[in-house]
Length: 304
Image 1: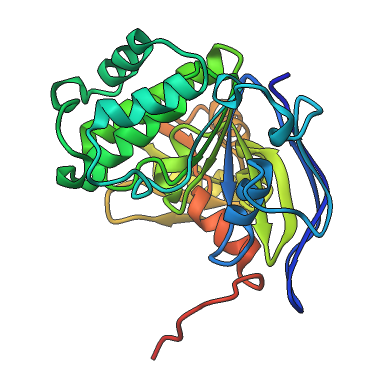
Image 2 (image 1 turned 180 degrees about the vertical axis):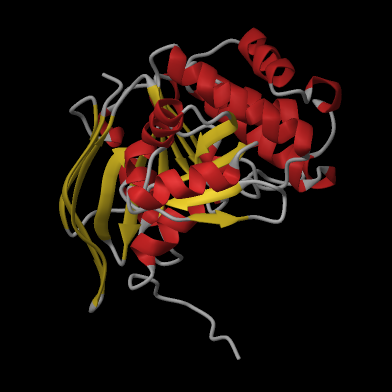
């Protein structure tokens, strides 16, 4: 019931095609990062999953059923798309209470999610007085209200302070560990890399990648190892015999292109050369993402 299934999803606005026969699954038990340049179609996809728009062709279902066919939908799906959507004149608790009553939930559940998201102390304040970070927490509280098996979160760390970012990171990991389906759209690559298990990447409405994050990065990284040794000259000679070169860094470490740390360590051990530090160097998620999407960006600035 917790699986999101996208099949040949297509969306046109007039003559402009926003999504082009998109097909992928979002599975329970892991945090799936939903990435892509501006205009790639991420928000449109989320809106179609939530029944906020109609596809030109194809389907977007949750557990095999469209969102609009779900009874008491907040019990099945929680979503944060726009933290500014809540009416500024309404008190935070009243906003959540309205959602709870309309979906057959108790007032006690409202108090539970207010406390869980850290805004219980401001529950009686009007939403218009909230900072962006507080609105984000309120939006997440609304998404959690029905204890749903599926969560769609668009830029959930936007406006949060460092403590809040750590909190939402652990929350998403915990929800996935409970067997829920968690789909998170974000532009913050470094932050996404800290909590995402799987990636779905779009470019100009088409699927560019659907893969575990480690495989995504490794596929766009050439092997490179970083090390420290007390005998650099000996190791340099040994590596040269194998066709590798050591390059000195300013911090006293050396890098070797084209080799993994495991092989380098075995070579050093065979030669009896002490190695004080050894690790693989991989591309960051940001580097791998930019490599994949470089030609799929609708809006880009020029440099002079």
